[in-house]
Image (cartoon, rainbow, N blue to C red; front, side):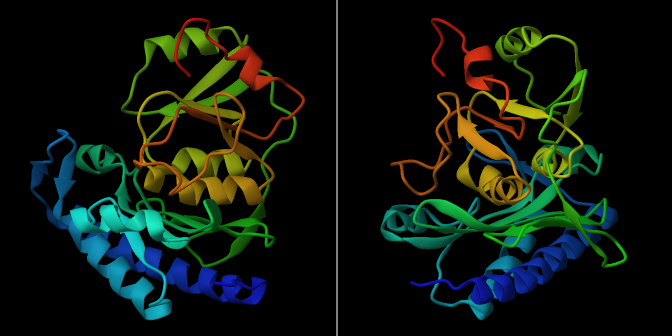
Amino acid sequence: MRLSPGQLSTWLTAVIEVAEAAGREIMRIYESGFSVTLKQDRSPLTEADLAAQRLIGAGLAQLAAEVPMLAEESAPEVFAQRRGWPTLWLVDPLDGTREFVKRNGEFTVNIALVHEHEPLLGVVTAPARRTTYAAVRGGGAFRRDADGSRTPIHARRSAAAPLRVLGSRSHGDAVLDRMLDRLGPQVRISVGSALKFGLLAEGSGDLYVRRGATSEWDTAAGHAVVLEAGGCVVDMQGSPLRYNARPGVINPSFMAYADRSRDWVGLLAEPGLER
């Protein structure tokens, strides 16, 4: 499949509409009450996850029926088929379900277009904040606010002093804390979901490091936004994250930043620990 810049730009506009429509449905459920069940991995699942995925699946199928979708709540057979897809949508219909359940507003809808293992397009919508971060390869990144205005965004190429470190709201990590302590004076900013990518892309943070399991649909959309904002998302050896390239859908540990004047890989290396 050949994807022209014009086609990608047109798709980006449509994907934003799909993501924001899913966000409105999520907010309807958020404001009216919901029940929570636990999946096999003990992570929460709500009616909002399922309703948003149905809406997104229908919207993307209407936009580009030839492009398959892999989402967090996809059927098992989809996971078996996806290794043969050079182009696919990676979707998390409700990233930060724990934050949704806590009602702190820090949850997102993530939609990414991946082609040959790289994210070409990404949309991260935070419905409770009425903010969308979006980007397409070669077209830059922007933030869309509640009034519909678009503001170009750029990651900060020179890290602030003290360093602003973005981290998970719900996933504490003592080993990571020890690694980060070596970086010197810093301000820790805890926030849920893919909002961390949006904050880094708009220059509101300098570094985001995540050890441990995340899934490809957690990161692909935010990765696309950070790239177009001038940053990068790499594993702990410094190689860019790739998608639909491994037997499973779990990412390696990774970091995101824009200041390339510092050797973050070397600074965060932990002898004797798997990276």
